[in-house]
Structure formats: C-alpha cells, structure tokens
Image (cartoon, rainbow, N blue to C red; front, side, top):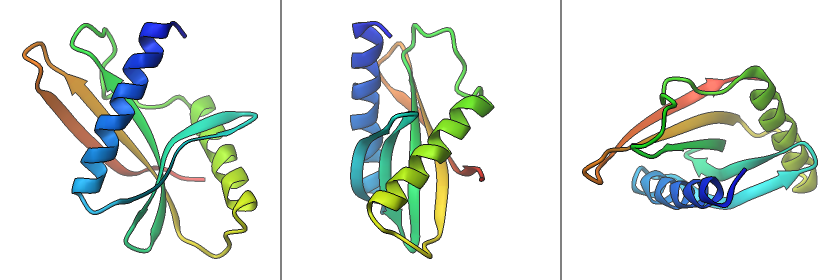
Length: 121
C-alpha cells in the first residue's frame, strides 16, 4: 500500500469514527492488529460489540462501494476479532461485524452506507 492509500484510509477512519459516534456508537478502539489482520474500529452499539471495517473511496477511485469484502478479508477480520476477545478476556458477548462505506464526491460531499451485520462467523 502506498502512502497516499494509507493516508486516505486513515482519513476515512477518522470520518467513519465521527459518523458512528453521531449514530450512538461508543468507540472503544481503532486499528487493532493481530498477526493476520487489522480491525479499523471496535465500538459498542447498545448491547453489541461491533467490529467495523471502513471502506473509503475518493471520487477518483475506480472501486464501487457495493463491492464490500472478499472471503479472505472476512476471515482475517474474524480471526482478529477472536484475538481481541481473547486478549481482553471478553466472553458471552454478542458481537457483530459491520461495514461502513464512504464514497467521496467531486464536490467534497460524502455518501455513507452502513451495512450492519454485514457478515457472520
């Protein structure tokens, strides 16, 4: 990943964090890493512990927000979520995997799409 993509991703995560806060999510952690992957945002949404993957697309991007996650990426996120739960000694908690896409427009506006419970273990 180039520095431009990295910076775009980090900017998208900051925008995503505010979007989620505005919708009642309580942010617990950002950029949690395991050997097999990273979870962009970990948050609490009511009684659910939510692992959020953020996909940020600039207006110059050729990717479409509808293309969410390939199975390999889902497995990586699931594995990393399990590592998080083990490290934090969290048991018997309802967990959910959300995907938040942010599509930047040329005029600077953004379109958000939150896919709650986007995939399951």
